[in-house]
Image (cartoon, rainbow, N blue to C red; front, side, top):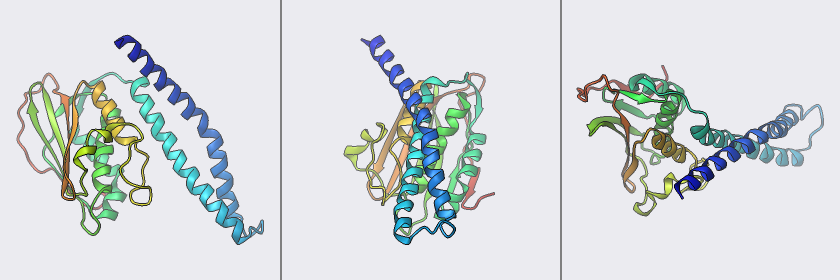
Amino acid sequence: MNEDLKRSNQELEQFAYIVSHDLQQPLQTITGFAELMLTLKSQINLEEEAEEYVLPILDEGMRLQQLIKNLLHYSRVGTKQAAFEAIDCNIILEETLSNLSLAIQESGAIITSEKLPMVFGDRLQLGQLFQNLIANAVKYHRPGIPPQITVSVMPKNQNWQFGIHDNGIGIPADKTQRIFQIFQRLHTQQEYPGNGIGLAICRKIIDRHRGDIWVESDLGVATSFYFTLPIYESQSPSITPEITTARNRPS
């Protein structure tokens, strides 16, 4: 039964990869022509009513492009795997904050972190893990309240237990398991844009690293995402906490 399930999951991942990959080119053609029509609207005498139809085509096309991109990321967790190596999580965090610098600046977020350890894992996947979780913490903040985000770490058995803590909108208690399933969303596109794949990717990454991921939340007050990663063998599981990151502007 386990082998059948494993094979089915592999086939599903491969199917998602093939479909997503093959959809990219025709979708790029559609959005490209829509952009061209808007750019040349005065030259081609594009009427105002027609422009109102072109804009939704472009918006939905771009949203679908992002969905396909995320589907590819999801499928590649299982199909495009790099060898595990020693990873400095401080560097991963710095790269994450650089990638998210615009969102951090626009939201006024302040992000602080303890000194992070070395772990053993897939560098690209761990970068995706940190980026997805911190991006969510930045995005799901309460209106008018800048995000306050803290990254913590502590040894737990033979692993490091990381925490991403925020002061955002929170998650209902009965939804804390559902959010790790693919395409599961708790909000409309108008409230918080997204496609419900980010946390599913996080779970797949953690599963590949034989860790755990879970969430604890106080609705309307705060949320903490926790995950475990294997300790790098040559490193002692002791660490002195210190603040290493605090920013709300891009470097």
